[in-house]
Amino acid sequence: MTIRTHPARARAAARPALPRVPALAVLAYHLVGYRRTWRSSVFSSFLLPLLTVLGFGVGVGAYVDQGVGGVPYLDWILPGLVASTAFQVAVAESTWPVHSSFHWTKLYYAQSAAPLRVGDILGGHLLFVLFRVLTAGAAFLAVAALFGVLHSVWALTVLPVLLLLGLAMAPLVFAYTAWVPGDSYLALLFRFAVIPATLFAGIFFPVESLPVALRWLAYATPLWHGVDLCRAATLGVAAQWSVPGHVLYLTAWAVAGWLFARRRFHRKLVV
Image 1: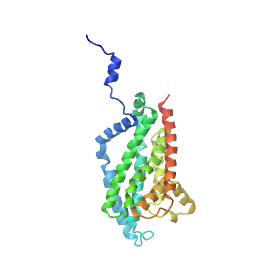
Image 2: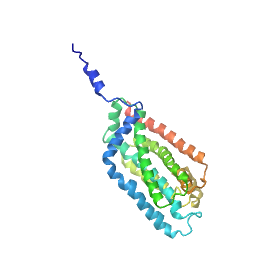
Image 3: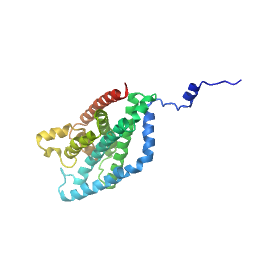
Image 4: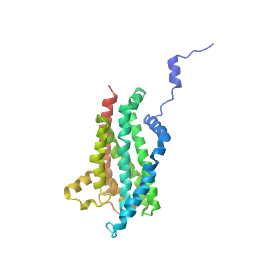
């Protein structure tokens, strides 16, 4: 006797099952895509840190004889450059790829047609952004180790700090990208937010040398909190601000960003 299976049940049985955490399926999709395109990011992730250290740390540092606060300029600037790299990778991976997934490739709409919720789509893509932040930060730390500027075992805590910094920035940029109508607004984000934050967040010179008004704007940016934590970890000194205060401040940005991003994604993907 032959038992016939209903075609719909057969298609359901042939369909690969989702993992227990569906966001991991979205992460796996982005990792498979990155496996085919990772060569294009080698320059920005691995060679650019080396050139940046040589240019700013060694080149400019040669003219800063006294260092900063008694610390050689190369040792002082490098943790700031590590935090800045994580910051820029988090923002870059949260702008055009997200815009493309809404407007050009329609990836998010395809994923929402599958048994995935808005939180799964957003969470899976966010995990991939954190993966990019982690690999870029690890590459920069390896360059720092080659130059002998890691002075404490606390330097190992830089990687979780970079993840927290990426988590503080990426969801909010996801929300911004989902909100703006065109990609020209993404260039404005870099011009009026990312570049000023990079210049005035205590990476290249102490924030205390700024006028008072600009100083408090620098303190308000998540990047300064990441820079202070990374500098304290690599130099083995106390942070300028309290460590729990830094962590709570960055966590507050992450939670607020997640809520905004989830709201914007829900409005665009759920009719």
